[in-house]
Length: 223
Ligand SMILES: *[C@@H]1O[C@H](CO)[C@@H](O)[C@H](O)[C@H]1NC(C)=O
Ligand SMILES: *[C@@H]1O[C@H](CO)[C@@H](O)[C@H](O)[C@H]1NC(C)=O
Picture 1 (cartoon, rainbow, N blue to C red):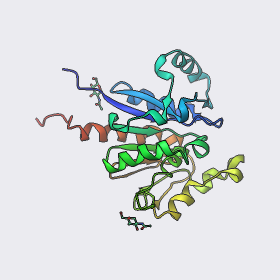
Picture 2: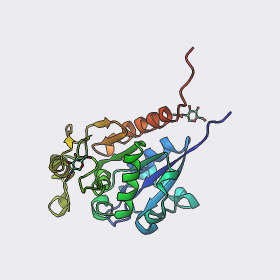
Picture 3: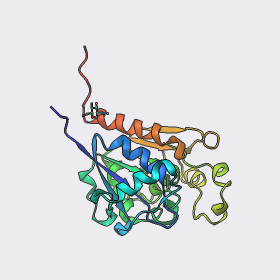
């Protein structure tokens, strides 16, 4: 008998700076066989998948032809319907997800319910707006990773970034850690999984899948 399919929410930046094509594609291919993936973006605006290359351009052309590639608006999302939430690496996330109140509500729901949530690279900025009723950041006592100052400083847009994830996490009480630039580095704290950069996507998402199957009790019987 087929196991029941979960629904997984992918939260995507629709800012011009875009979503990392490889981070999105790797996560989508890992999650979609076992999970109904719903894409959502601010106001349901279209997504720019950046840094496509020869190996994935064709995949994106085919993907865009499918109805499921059209995001719904974050403001229409009922978070109770989703088992997991994932935010891929996205240079645009600091521009539109950072202060999005609909996303803040969704993330707050996931923290209250302790449901698996995962963010990678700049996508981690999508967690920054979620606050407790008393105004503190939800993740003030969590261990997290995200792009390091050192990693970000290599990019031309560094000087104009609205927020530096490493600084934000440290200044708001979170435990920040990172590895060397472009290294695979994933932190798991309770139900929250963060990956430092695009390169950490697969490791982070594998852990998200593992966590969601454990949570639903879909473990194989002992022999
Ligand atoms: C995903 O689905 C396949 C086929 O239904 C199943 O064999 C596999 O164990 C599932 N993986 C997870 C992680 O649930
Ligand atoms: C908010 O509540 C948490 C406990 O849930 C506490 O640790 C934190 O210090 C409080 N923040 C403020 C600003 O009162």
